[in-house]
Amino acid sequence: MANSQANTVTKLRARDGTVLGTFNVGTNPHGVAFDGANIWVANTDSDTVTKLRARDGTVLGTFTVGTEPIGVAFDGANIWVTNLSSANVSKLRASDGTALGTFGVGADPFGVAFDGTNIWVVNESSNNVTKLRASDGNVLATVPVGAQPLGVAFDGANVWVANLGGGTVSKL
Image (cartoon, rainbow, N blue to C red; front, side):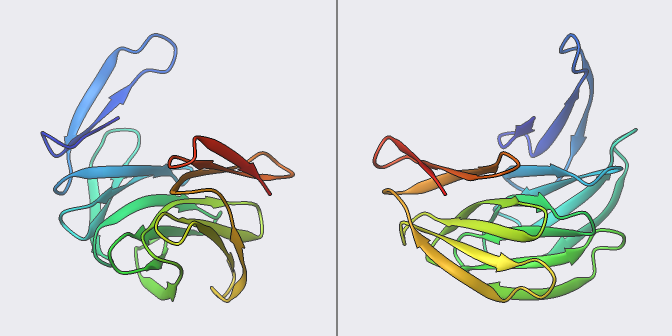
């Protein structure tokens, strides 16, 4: 759970919600992702992501990305971060945080999801979704969806997009 007022994230035990620790990250933490061993937190006002060891919350690194990072996803080897004000996504190697590329998408990229092969980025102000090949970041498609898309998820067969402005959900 990210706490943007305190610039921390809190670890809760899943079975009962017991607080197991609160850990400092960058300014205005927003999106979080798990890479199998570590937690990655997008720090929107610091233009960074913080890598925390999941078992004890130790900070393993803080990495600079684009302007206003907000969404985070793990593709099995890399971390993808949407940069709201930069209109792009950053790709970092999960093992050490090395920047592997920055890829242009639509206006105000927000949520991000991995479908097993591709990265899907919702672009809030473009009212569309950008599909990127995870291996190299090449844009494969730009798909129109409803107004002001913010959330995205993959269900194993389809990509679902929550459109805040239209009060709808798009199924791709």
